[in-house]
Image 1 (cartoon, rainbow, N blue to C red):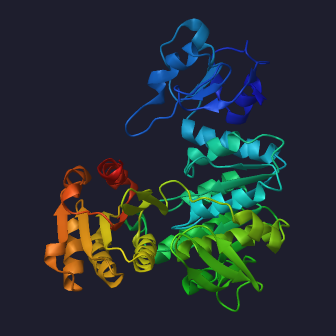
Image 2: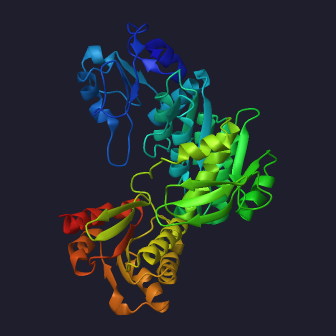
Image 3: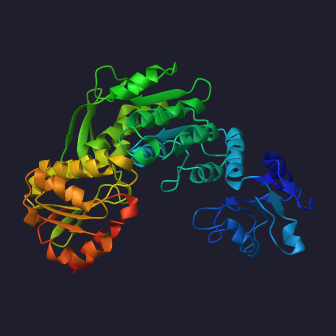
Amino acid sequence: MITFSSLQIILNARSGSGHLADITIGAISTDTRTIRPGDCFFAISGPNFDGHDYVGQAFDKGAICAVVQRDIDLPPVQKGRLLIVKDTIKALGQLAAWYRSQLQASVVAITGSAGKTTTRHITYHVLSKFFSCHQATNSFNNHIGLPLTILAAQPEHQIMLLELGTNHPGEIGYLTRIARPDIALVTCAVPAHLEGFGSVDHIIREKLSISEGLTPGGLFIVNGDQPEIICNTMSLNCPYLMFGTGAACDFQAQNLKTQGNWGELTIEGLPIRVPMPGRANLMNALAAWAICQTVGISLSDFANAIGDIEPVAMRMNIETIGPIKIIIDCYNANPASMANALDCLNTLSQIDHQRAVFVAGCMAELGPASRQLHYELGQKAVHSGVQFLLAAGPFASDIIAGATYAGLNPARCKTFPDTQILCDNLHEFVRPADIVLVKGSRSAGMEKAVEQLRKLYTR
Protein backbone atom coordinates (compact mmCIF):
# COMPACT_ATOMS: atom_id res chain seq x y z
CA MET A 1 0.00 0.00 0.00
CA ILE A 2 2.62 2.54 1.12
CA THR A 3 6.14 2.58 2.50
CA PHE A 4 7.16 3.69 5.95
CA SER A 5 9.09 6.70 4.61
CA SER A 6 6.18 7.78 2.37
CA LEU A 7 3.81 7.57 5.33
CA GLN A 8 6.15 9.74 7.36
CA ILE A 9 6.13 12.39 4.63
CA ILE A 10 2.35 12.32 4.15
CA LEU A 11 1.75 12.72 7.89
CA ASN A 12 4.67 15.11 8.45
CA ALA A 13 5.58 12.82 11.34
CA ARG A 14 8.66 12.49 13.50
CA SER A 15 10.37 9.11 13.58
CA GLY A 16 12.93 7.57 15.86
CA SER A 17 14.56 5.59 13.06
CA GLY A 18 14.95 5.50 9.31
CA HIS A 19 15.80 1.83 8.89
CA LEU A 20 12.22 0.98 7.89
CA ALA A 21 12.18 3.45 4.99
CA ASP A 22 11.63 0.85 2.28
CA ILE A 23 9.33 -1.45 4.22
CA THR A 24 5.85 -1.67 2.72
CA ILE A 25 2.89 -1.35 5.06
CA GLY A 26 0.17 -3.94 4.49
CA ALA A 27 -2.88 -2.14 5.88
CA ILE A 28 -4.06 0.34 8.50
CA SER A 29 -5.56 -0.79 11.80
CA THR A 30 -6.91 0.87 14.94
CA ASP A 31 -7.80 -2.38 16.71
CA THR A 32 -5.24 -4.81 18.10
CA ARG A 33 -7.89 -7.54 18.14
CA THR A 34 -7.86 -7.69 14.35
CA ILE A 35 -4.37 -6.46 13.52
CA ARG A 36 -2.27 -8.55 11.15
CA PRO A 37 1.48 -8.85 10.58
CA GLY A 38 2.71 -5.98 8.44
CA ASP A 39 -0.06 -3.55 9.45
CA CYS A 40 0.40 0.00 10.69
CA PHE A 41 -1.34 0.62 14.00
CA PHE A 42 -2.91 4.03 14.65
CA ALA A 43 -3.19 4.70 18.39
CA ILE A 44 -6.59 6.39 18.73
CA SER A 45 -7.71 7.89 22.03
CA GLY A 46 -11.42 7.74 22.89
CA PRO A 47 -13.60 8.51 25.91
CA ASN A 48 -13.31 4.96 27.25
CA PHE A 49 -9.94 3.81 25.94
CA ASP A 50 -6.52 4.95 24.78
CA GLY A 51 -4.89 3.14 21.88
CA HIS A 52 -1.48 4.19 23.17
CA ASP A 53 -1.90 1.61 25.92
CA TYR A 54 -1.96 -1.12 23.26
CA VAL A 55 0.94 -0.14 21.03
CA GLY A 56 3.23 -2.79 22.56
CA GLN A 57 0.52 -5.40 22.00
CA ALA A 58 0.21 -4.28 18.37
CA PHE A 59 3.91 -4.81 17.83
CA ASP A 60 3.74 -8.21 19.51
CA LYS A 61 1.08 -9.20 16.98
CA GLY A 62 3.25 -8.20 14.04
CA ALA A 63 2.54 -4.51 13.42
CA ILE A 64 5.32 -3.03 11.31
CA CYS A 65 4.94 0.45 12.79
CA ALA A 66 2.61 2.62 14.85
CA VAL A 67 1.35 6.19 14.57
CA VAL A 68 1.12 7.90 17.97
CA GLN A 69 0.68 11.39 19.37
CA ARG A 70 2.92 11.03 22.39
CA ASP A 71 6.09 9.19 23.26
CA ILE A 72 5.72 5.67 24.64
CA ASP A 73 8.02 3.60 26.78
CA LEU A 74 8.98 0.71 24.50
CA PRO A 75 12.05 -1.40 23.74
CA PRO A 76 14.47 0.47 21.42
CA VAL A 77 13.63 -1.67 18.38
CA GLN A 78 9.91 -0.93 18.71
CA LYS A 79 10.50 2.70 19.64
CA GLY A 80 12.23 3.15 16.30
CA ARG A 81 9.05 2.09 14.55
CA LEU A 82 6.97 4.94 15.91
CA LEU A 83 5.69 7.84 13.83
CA ILE A 84 4.77 10.73 16.10
CA VAL A 85 2.10 13.23 15.02
CA LYS A 86 0.11 15.97 16.76
CA ASP A 87 -3.25 14.20 16.48
CA THR A 88 -3.66 10.58 15.40
CA ILE A 89 -7.32 11.00 14.40
CA LYS A 90 -6.51 13.91 12.11
CA ALA A 91 -3.51 12.00 10.80
CA LEU A 92 -5.80 9.09 9.94
CA GLY A 93 -8.02 11.45 7.95
CA GLN A 94 -4.98 13.02 6.30
CA LEU A 95 -3.77 9.60 5.14
CA ALA A 96 -7.24 8.66 3.89
CA ALA A 97 -7.51 11.91 1.90
CA TRP A 98 -4.14 11.18 0.26
CA TYR A 99 -5.11 7.59 -0.52
CA ARG A 100 -8.47 8.66 -1.96
CA SER A 101 -6.54 10.92 -4.39
CA GLN A 102 -4.57 7.88 -5.61
CA LEU A 103 -7.66 5.80 -6.39
CA GLN A 104 -9.40 5.64 -9.75
CA ALA A 105 -12.75 4.65 -8.23
CA SER A 106 -15.76 6.95 -8.51
CA VAL A 107 -16.78 7.98 -5.00
CA VAL A 108 -20.41 8.17 -3.89
CA ALA A 109 -21.05 9.82 -0.52
CA ILE A 110 -24.43 9.65 1.25
CA THR A 111 -25.62 11.64 4.24
CA GLY A 112 -28.96 12.42 5.88
CA SER A 113 -30.83 12.18 9.17
CA ALA A 114 -32.19 8.75 8.23
CA GLY A 115 -31.79 6.25 5.43
CA LYS A 116 -28.03 6.61 4.89
CA THR A 117 -27.15 2.99 5.55
CA THR A 118 -30.15 1.51 3.74
CA THR A 119 -29.66 3.74 0.68
CA ARG A 120 -26.01 2.76 0.57
CA HIS A 121 -26.98 -0.89 1.07
CA ILE A 122 -29.45 -0.83 -1.83
CA THR A 123 -27.04 1.05 -4.09
CA TYR A 124 -24.23 -1.38 -3.36
CA HIS A 125 -26.51 -4.37 -3.91
CA VAL A 126 -27.43 -3.12 -7.38
CA LEU A 127 -24.11 -1.69 -8.52
CA SER A 128 -22.06 -4.67 -7.35
CA LYS A 129 -23.84 -6.74 -9.99
CA PHE A 130 -22.24 -4.56 -12.67
CA PHE A 131 -19.10 -3.03 -11.14
CA SER A 132 -16.35 -3.84 -8.65
CA CYS A 133 -17.61 -1.94 -5.61
CA HIS A 134 -16.35 -1.12 -2.14
CA GLN A 135 -18.58 0.07 0.69
CA ALA A 136 -18.53 1.03 4.33
CA THR A 137 -18.62 -1.77 6.88
CA ASN A 138 -21.74 -1.52 9.05
CA SER A 139 -22.20 2.22 9.67
CA PHE A 140 -18.57 3.34 9.46
CA ASN A 141 -19.46 6.99 8.87
CA ASN A 142 -17.57 9.14 11.37
CA HIS A 143 -14.10 10.70 11.64
CA ILE A 144 -12.59 7.25 12.28
CA GLY A 145 -14.89 4.94 10.34
CA LEU A 146 -14.89 6.90 7.10
CA PRO A 147 -11.07 7.07 6.77
CA LEU A 148 -10.81 3.36 7.59
CA THR A 149 -13.37 2.60 4.86
CA ILE A 150 -11.40 4.57 2.29
CA LEU A 151 -8.11 3.00 3.35
CA ALA A 152 -9.60 -0.49 2.92
CA ALA A 153 -10.42 0.14 -0.76
CA GLN A 154 -8.37 -1.66 -3.39
CA PRO A 155 -7.00 -0.21 -6.66
CA GLU A 156 -9.28 -2.48 -8.70
CA HIS A 157 -12.47 -1.07 -7.19
CA GLN A 158 -14.50 0.99 -9.66
CA ILE A 159 -17.02 2.52 -7.27
CA MET A 160 -16.69 3.35 -3.57
CA LEU A 161 -19.84 3.95 -1.51
CA LEU A 162 -19.41 5.99 1.65
CA GLU A 163 -21.64 7.20 4.48
CA LEU A 164 -21.08 10.52 6.20
CA GLY A 165 -22.60 10.88 9.66
CA THR A 166 -22.65 13.71 12.17
CA ASN A 167 -23.98 14.77 15.55
CA HIS A 168 -22.21 18.16 15.78
CA PRO A 169 -21.75 21.07 13.34
CA GLY A 170 -18.75 20.89 11.03
CA GLU A 171 -18.34 17.12 10.90
CA ILE A 172 -19.83 16.63 7.43
CA GLY A 173 -17.61 19.37 6.01
CA TYR A 174 -14.55 17.67 7.48
CA LEU A 175 -15.53 14.24 6.18
CA THR A 176 -16.49 15.36 2.68
CA ARG A 177 -13.12 17.03 2.22
CA ILE A 178 -11.53 13.65 2.95
CA ALA A 179 -13.94 11.70 0.72
CA ARG A 180 -13.97 14.13 -2.24
CA PRO A 181 -17.13 12.56 -3.68
CA ASP A 182 -17.99 12.50 -7.36
CA ILE A 183 -21.64 12.03 -6.37
CA ALA A 184 -23.08 13.35 -3.09
CA LEU A 185 -26.63 12.62 -1.94
CA VAL A 186 -28.74 13.88 0.97
CA THR A 187 -31.50 11.42 1.92
CA CYS A 188 -33.49 13.71 4.24
CA ALA A 189 -33.18 16.08 7.17
CA VAL A 190 -35.43 15.55 10.20
CA PRO A 191 -35.22 16.14 13.98
CA ALA A 192 -32.21 14.04 15.01
CA HIS A 193 -29.15 14.89 17.13
CA LEU A 194 -30.93 18.10 18.17
CA GLU A 195 -28.76 18.07 21.26
CA GLY A 196 -25.79 18.94 19.05
CA PHE A 197 -27.55 21.12 16.45
CA GLY A 198 -30.39 22.91 18.23
CA SER A 199 -32.75 23.09 15.25
CA VAL A 200 -33.75 21.27 12.07
CA ASP A 201 -32.53 24.26 10.06
CA HIS A 202 -29.03 23.74 11.43
CA ILE A 203 -29.30 20.04 10.63
CA ILE A 204 -30.22 20.83 7.02
CA ARG A 205 -27.25 23.16 6.62
CA GLU A 206 -24.95 20.54 8.08
CA LYS A 207 -26.20 17.82 5.73
CA LEU A 208 -25.94 20.09 2.69
CA SER A 209 -22.31 20.86 3.51
CA ILE A 210 -21.51 17.52 1.90
CA SER A 211 -21.50 19.50 -1.36
CA GLU A 212 -18.36 21.35 -0.23
CA GLY A 213 -16.19 18.33 -1.01
CA LEU A 214 -17.55 17.55 -4.47
CA THR A 215 -14.95 17.05 -7.18
CA PRO A 216 -15.09 19.48 -10.12
CA GLY A 217 -18.15 18.58 -12.16
CA GLY A 218 -19.44 16.38 -9.35
CA LEU A 219 -23.14 15.64 -9.01
CA PHE A 220 -25.23 16.80 -6.04
CA ILE A 221 -28.57 15.04 -5.40
CA VAL A 222 -31.06 16.07 -2.70
CA ASN A 223 -34.51 15.10 -1.45
CA GLY A 224 -36.97 17.12 -3.52
CA ASP A 225 -39.90 16.35 -1.22
CA GLN A 226 -38.50 18.55 1.56
CA PRO A 227 -39.04 22.24 0.65
CA GLU A 228 -36.67 23.33 3.44
CA ILE A 229 -33.85 21.32 1.85
CA ILE A 230 -34.52 22.78 -1.59
CA CYS A 231 -34.68 26.33 -0.24
CA ASN A 232 -31.31 25.96 1.45
CA THR A 233 -29.81 24.13 -1.53
CA MET A 234 -30.76 26.98 -3.87
CA SER A 235 -28.74 29.38 -1.73
CA LEU A 236 -25.58 27.30 -2.17
CA ASN A 237 -25.11 28.32 -5.81
CA CYS A 238 -24.33 24.68 -6.56
CA PRO A 239 -25.99 22.70 -9.41
CA TYR A 240 -28.23 19.96 -8.04
CA LEU A 241 -30.77 17.31 -8.99
CA MET A 242 -33.76 16.12 -6.96
CA PHE A 243 -35.32 12.76 -6.18
CA GLY A 244 -38.85 12.51 -4.82
CA THR A 245 -42.51 12.25 -5.65
CA GLY A 246 -43.06 15.82 -6.85
CA ALA A 247 -43.46 16.74 -10.50
CA ALA A 248 -40.31 18.90 -10.44
CA CYS A 249 -38.08 16.02 -9.32
CA ASP A 250 -35.46 14.75 -11.75
CA PHE A 251 -35.80 11.22 -10.36
CA GLN A 252 -39.52 10.86 -9.73
CA ALA A 253 -41.54 8.02 -8.21
CA GLN A 254 -45.29 7.56 -8.29
CA ASN A 255 -47.85 5.20 -6.81
CA LEU A 256 -45.88 4.37 -3.67
CA LYS A 257 -47.61 1.60 -1.75
CA THR A 258 -46.58 -0.75 1.04
CA GLN A 259 -47.82 -4.29 1.53
CA GLY A 260 -46.44 -5.53 4.83
CA ASN A 261 -42.88 -6.69 4.32
CA TRP A 262 -42.59 -5.32 0.78
CA GLY A 263 -43.57 -2.28 -1.23
CA GLU A 264 -43.83 -0.96 -4.75
CA LEU A 265 -43.17 2.29 -6.55
CA THR A 266 -43.46 3.30 -10.17
CA ILE A 267 -40.55 4.99 -11.95
CA GLU A 268 -40.94 6.16 -15.55
CA GLY A 269 -44.02 3.99 -15.88
CA LEU A 270 -42.30 0.83 -14.62
CA PRO A 271 -43.63 -0.73 -11.38
CA ILE A 272 -40.69 -1.80 -9.20
CA ARG A 273 -41.14 -4.24 -6.34
CA VAL A 274 -38.95 -3.55 -3.31
CA PRO A 275 -38.73 -6.49 -0.86
CA MET A 276 -38.35 -4.21 2.17
CA PRO A 277 -41.08 -2.85 4.50
CA GLY A 278 -42.21 0.73 4.94
CA ARG A 279 -42.59 3.84 2.81
CA ALA A 280 -39.19 5.12 3.92
CA ASN A 281 -37.53 2.18 2.21
CA LEU A 282 -39.32 3.05 -1.02
CA MET A 283 -37.78 6.52 -0.80
CA ASN A 284 -34.42 4.94 -0.03
CA ALA A 285 -34.83 2.81 -3.16
CA LEU A 286 -35.62 5.93 -5.19
CA ALA A 287 -32.50 7.66 -3.85
CA ALA A 288 -30.48 4.57 -4.80
CA TRP A 289 -32.00 4.70 -8.29
CA ALA A 290 -30.84 8.32 -8.65
CA ILE A 291 -27.27 7.19 -7.99
CA CYS A 292 -27.48 4.07 -10.14
CA GLN A 293 -28.99 5.89 -13.11
CA THR A 294 -26.21 8.47 -12.89
CA VAL A 295 -23.51 5.82 -13.26
CA GLY A 296 -25.25 4.22 -16.22
CA ILE A 297 -27.59 1.51 -14.90
CA SER A 298 -30.79 1.04 -16.89
CA LEU A 299 -34.13 1.13 -15.12
CA SER A 300 -34.93 -2.47 -16.06
CA ASP A 301 -31.57 -3.64 -14.71
CA PHE A 302 -32.19 -1.69 -11.51
CA ALA A 303 -35.65 -3.24 -11.10
CA ASN A 304 -34.28 -6.75 -11.62
CA ALA A 305 -31.30 -6.24 -9.33
CA ILE A 306 -33.26 -4.84 -6.39
CA GLY A 307 -35.68 -7.76 -6.45
CA ASP A 308 -33.57 -10.04 -4.26
CA ILE A 309 -32.27 -7.52 -1.72
CA GLU A 310 -32.60 -8.16 2.01
CA PRO A 311 -32.98 -5.51 4.74
CA VAL A 312 -30.00 -4.27 6.72
CA ALA A 313 -29.59 -6.00 10.08
CA MET A 314 -31.64 -4.41 12.89
CA ARG A 315 -33.33 -2.03 10.44
CA MET A 316 -36.95 -2.91 9.73
CA ASN A 317 -36.37 -6.68 9.77
CA ILE A 318 -39.57 -8.72 10.03
CA GLU A 319 -39.19 -12.04 11.80
CA THR A 320 -41.76 -14.68 12.69
CA ILE A 321 -40.98 -16.45 15.96
CA GLY A 322 -43.44 -19.19 16.80
CA PRO A 323 -46.88 -17.58 17.15
CA ILE A 324 -45.70 -13.93 17.08
CA LYS A 325 -44.25 -11.61 14.47
CA ILE A 326 -41.59 -9.02 15.31
CA ILE A 327 -40.57 -5.88 13.46
CA ILE A 328 -36.95 -5.40 14.51
CA ASP A 329 -35.63 -1.83 14.16
CA CYS A 330 -33.12 -1.40 16.96
CA TYR A 331 -30.20 0.39 15.34
CA ASN A 332 -31.30 3.97 15.74
CA ALA A 333 -34.36 6.14 16.19
CA ASN A 334 -35.64 9.65 15.63
CA PRO A 335 -39.20 10.96 15.24
CA ALA A 336 -39.27 10.34 11.48
CA SER A 337 -37.96 6.78 11.63
CA MET A 338 -40.32 6.03 14.53
CA ALA A 339 -43.25 7.26 12.45
CA ASN A 340 -42.22 5.08 9.52
CA ALA A 341 -41.90 1.99 11.73
CA LEU A 342 -45.29 2.64 13.34
CA ASP A 343 -46.90 2.99 9.91
CA CYS A 344 -45.39 -0.37 8.96
CA LEU A 345 -46.73 -1.93 12.19
CA ASN A 346 -50.18 -0.56 11.40
CA THR A 347 -50.13 -1.97 7.86
CA LEU A 348 -48.98 -5.43 8.96
CA SER A 349 -51.44 -5.64 11.85
CA GLN A 350 -54.32 -4.86 9.52
CA ILE A 351 -53.17 -7.34 6.88
CA ASP A 352 -52.63 -10.16 9.38
CA HIS A 353 -55.40 -9.15 11.84
CA GLN A 354 -52.97 -9.23 14.76
CA ARG A 355 -52.82 -7.09 17.91
CA ALA A 356 -50.28 -4.29 17.42
CA VAL A 357 -47.80 -4.04 20.31
CA PHE A 358 -45.14 -1.33 20.50
CA VAL A 359 -42.05 -2.02 22.63
CA ALA A 360 -40.44 1.42 22.68
CA GLY A 361 -37.01 2.53 23.71
CA CYS A 362 -36.20 6.21 23.97
CA MET A 363 -34.80 8.40 21.21
CA ALA A 364 -31.35 9.80 22.04
CA GLU A 365 -29.71 13.18 21.50
CA LEU A 366 -32.87 15.24 21.05
CA GLY A 367 -31.85 17.89 23.56
CA PRO A 368 -34.44 20.21 25.18
CA ALA A 369 -37.14 18.91 22.81
CA SER A 370 -36.83 15.34 24.14
CA ARG A 371 -39.88 15.29 26.40
CA GLN A 372 -42.19 16.87 23.83
CA LEU A 373 -40.98 14.61 20.99
CA HIS A 374 -41.47 11.51 23.13
CA TYR A 375 -44.94 12.74 24.08
CA GLU A 376 -45.74 13.14 20.39
CA LEU A 377 -44.36 9.63 19.77
CA GLY A 378 -46.96 8.26 22.19
CA GLN A 379 -49.69 10.10 20.30
CA LYS A 380 -48.38 8.82 16.97
CA ALA A 381 -48.41 5.26 18.32
CA VAL A 382 -52.12 5.49 19.11
CA HIS A 383 -52.95 7.10 15.78
CA SER A 384 -51.08 4.21 14.14
CA GLY A 385 -53.31 1.62 15.79
CA VAL A 386 -51.07 0.48 18.63
CA GLN A 387 -53.17 -1.52 21.09
CA PHE A 388 -50.57 -2.17 23.77
CA LEU A 389 -47.54 -0.01 24.57
CA LEU A 390 -44.47 -0.83 26.64
CA ALA A 391 -41.85 1.89 27.06
CA ALA A 392 -38.46 1.91 28.75
CA GLY A 393 -35.92 4.58 29.57
CA PRO A 394 -35.74 8.17 30.82
CA PHE A 395 -38.62 9.45 28.66
CA ALA A 396 -40.87 6.38 28.91
CA SER A 397 -43.43 8.27 31.02
CA ASP A 398 -43.66 10.98 28.34
CA ILE A 399 -44.40 8.35 25.68
CA ILE A 400 -47.15 6.87 27.83
CA ALA A 401 -48.56 10.31 28.67
CA GLY A 402 -48.89 11.09 24.97
CA ALA A 403 -50.50 7.73 24.29
CA THR A 404 -53.09 8.01 27.06
CA TYR A 405 -53.92 11.58 26.04
CA ALA A 406 -54.55 10.26 22.51
CA GLY A 407 -57.01 7.73 23.91
CA LEU A 408 -55.09 4.55 24.77
CA ASN A 409 -56.44 2.87 27.89
CA PRO A 410 -53.88 3.32 30.72
CA ALA A 411 -54.32 -0.40 31.50
CA ARG A 412 -52.73 -1.10 28.10
CA CYS A 413 -49.57 0.90 28.86
CA LYS A 414 -46.58 0.12 31.00
CA THR A 415 -43.35 1.99 31.76
CA PHE A 416 -40.01 0.54 32.85
CA PRO A 417 -36.92 2.36 34.09
CA ASP A 418 -34.62 0.53 31.67
CA THR A 419 -34.55 -2.08 28.92
CA GLN A 420 -33.43 -4.94 31.12
CA ILE A 421 -36.38 -4.60 33.49
CA LEU A 422 -38.69 -4.37 30.48
CA CYS A 423 -37.19 -7.63 29.18
CA ASP A 424 -37.75 -9.33 32.52
CA ASN A 425 -41.46 -8.52 32.29
CA LEU A 426 -42.19 -9.08 28.59
CA HIS A 427 -43.77 -12.46 29.26
CA GLU A 428 -46.60 -10.76 31.16
CA PHE A 429 -47.68 -8.51 28.30
CA VAL A 430 -46.83 -10.02 24.90
CA ARG A 431 -49.11 -12.87 23.91
CA PRO A 432 -49.38 -15.35 21.02
CA ALA A 433 -50.61 -13.89 17.71
CA ASP A 434 -49.28 -10.40 18.51
CA ILE A 435 -47.26 -8.38 16.03
CA VAL A 436 -44.58 -6.52 17.99
CA LEU A 437 -42.56 -3.48 16.92
CA VAL A 438 -39.30 -3.22 18.88
CA LYS A 439 -37.59 0.11 18.26
CA GLY A 440 -35.37 2.64 20.01
CA SER A 441 -32.07 4.45 19.67
CA ARG A 442 -28.90 2.38 19.72
CA SER A 443 -28.16 3.48 23.28
CA ALA A 444 -31.43 1.90 24.45
CA GLY A 445 -30.17 -1.60 23.55
CA MET A 446 -33.58 -2.76 22.37
CA GLU A 447 -32.06 -5.84 20.73
CA LYS A 448 -32.19 -7.30 24.25
CA ALA A 449 -35.99 -7.26 24.01
CA VAL A 450 -35.79 -9.07 20.67
CA GLU A 451 -33.59 -11.76 22.18
CA GLN A 452 -35.98 -12.14 25.10
CA LEU A 453 -38.93 -12.59 22.74
CA ARG A 454 -36.96 -15.22 20.84
CA LYS A 455 -36.35 -17.09 24.07
CA LEU A 456 -40.00 -16.89 25.05
CA TYR A 457 -41.46 -18.07 21.77
CA THR A 458 -38.82 -20.31 20.16
CA ARG A 459 -39.77 -23.94 20.56
